Amino acid sequence: MKISRIEDYIGGWFVGNFEPTAYKTDQFEVSYKLHPKGQEWDIHYHSTVTEINAVVRGKMILQGKELKTGDVFILEPYEIADPEFLEDTEIICVKTPSVNDKISVIKK
Image 1 (spheres, helix red, strand yellow):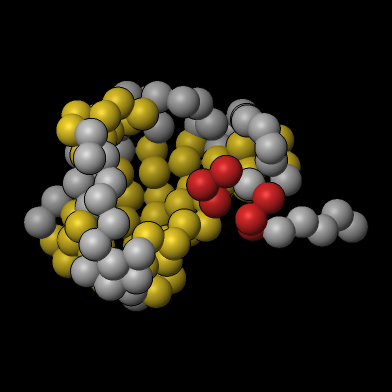
Image 2: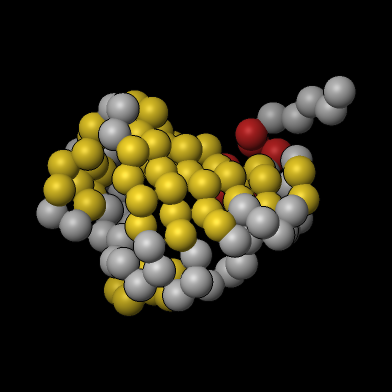
């Protein structure tokens, strides 16, 4: 058994085709993210990747819709991510495939 800590990884990303990683694969990426209330985040989209997200705790707005603890949302390629964090928000994010295709529309 290997043991590590989420703090060992960049931006909460601990599975995927990058370094450092707990498990290397080009099939998907997994992260655990904590977004503090009011955190500014680039408005962006992905050209290839599909993102599957679960709100573990907190409240946010994305594409004008309020999302809260227990909500699962999927962003397909070219769908805009424009998050506003209303509370400290924890998210598990799975992206497939594991490629760096993020395109920032507005940098904050």
